[in-house]
Image: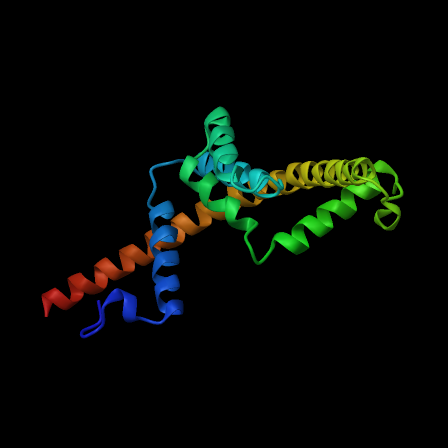
Length: 175
């Protein structure tokens, strides 16, 4: 802690960096294997791509349990979709679903009754869910593959840094 500063009086960016570094290091120091961490990442990205607000973390952790992935990593990576990314992600997922279904006509301007509104809304929701599922499968597979290569590299980098820091301390103590 900086002298004279409480944690709450620090700028938000500094607090965010500290929190990010804490979780980054805790996952790198985790006893979980690279495969477990990568499976957790993949399940988190899968659930994060689904338009099921409030259920994404629960779904990610349940899927991580099924595939024996790291559950905290699954919960963390659901934040691939967050309030800043919802609109572009779900717009793109809708476009993918619309393309898969064959570009059906969605005409919200001619809605004359509640029945028409529900029909059009149900069709739009189905298209969004289909596109989201497709993108979830694709992106979770990519995440797993990238995670399998990236996690061992990051863990090794942390080990090298730790050894370097320890040798610097030993050299300093020998003086």
